[in-house]
Length: 378
Image 1 (cartoon, helix red, strand yellow):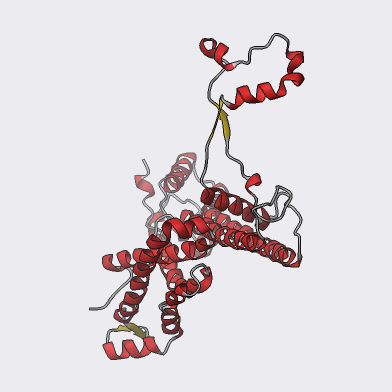
Image 2: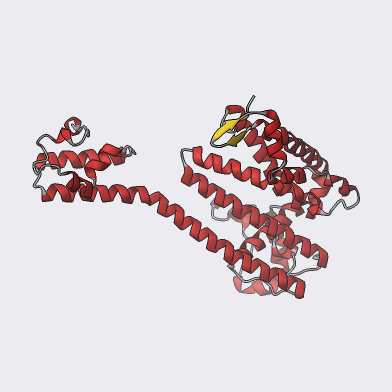
């Protein structure tokens, strides 16, 4: 049986393979956070084995896909295996299933041991291109792909930032230090009562006779309001990841000021981040520009055809009734998203119209030159 990605089973398999790759690319670097290793280490290992099994099965799936020779698709098992083994994709697939997890027994916190799993990026890229060609909303899918790429880049950069912070120690860091600090992301405080309403005004407001005496009652006010304030109490893993991701996003997009690096390694990391950020967003702006241009290209082409048609009918002194019917038909085509076929394009292209010699009176014997159903415009 020949395996095809566009079949139902092939689509389901592509989904599993993509999810396995996303698990690897997201979780590989999360080991740098000690809370992640302590709370989710067993679950992480189980998911790793599951995704590794998917990668191993993908070797046999790719053999089932058959091969293409001189424009025709073949399904000879021997030729399929031979062509697959002697291509670069086979070497990358083998690299992706190497059992590097065994080294976790020696270095349990070295997060780059499973980075060879990212060799499946070529296979995932093929799946993404296949989805982009088949999905009815290609522009929205391209934006989603771009947003996912940005998030993954921020994610990995955040993990590298926290890894450097842990190497230099952040337990005593302050808001002015380059490394991570708990002071940079305190718990969110909020009042437990609302003094704007009369029914609890007395229990929310501090009983005072003269507000000018507040500087002398600082400690008393502090003790009073401490009982009226609640906090979010986020866990350390959330704080570490959120602050690292925030630092990564600000650095890569070169927005906002960050504390100065304290040594040459931190400075080099900051410089590399800045360069990557500049190149990244130059590419993103270019991609967005291309996507916007492509989104408007069809509209621009249609508008050119419409303007050419109007100009032609004005030059040929077409009567008002036929003129309005043609314009209404064009607007109908655009509103309902219908594309012009070849006959219609020939009719509406002013240069082609003049070249084939359509009569001056466009209402006379026009059916000999086009099959456009103008008589059914009502």
